[in-house]
Image (cartoon, rainbow, N blue to C red; front, side, top):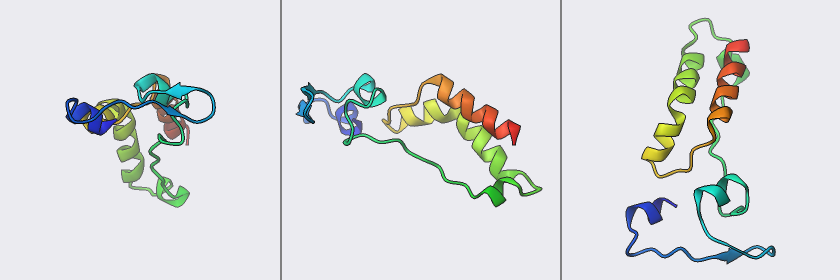
Length: 96
């Protein structure tokens, strides 16, 4: 997807068939799982002990990331999650 965004003239959208009919790379096909296994989520892993640190730096960073995740993803030509995913993750961070 990033290559498509950067060089539309040099990269073609080629449909792929995973056994359920051809699928073209798009935001919708990535979000609905139709373009898997060629697409995947980008995870950020944090140890529970780090979230429990008194300084709260990890939690603050993760909150910052959830607030800006969609813009950062678009900037890097990734497909951002839907807004509700970022909101749900923010609520989980605040609840712990």
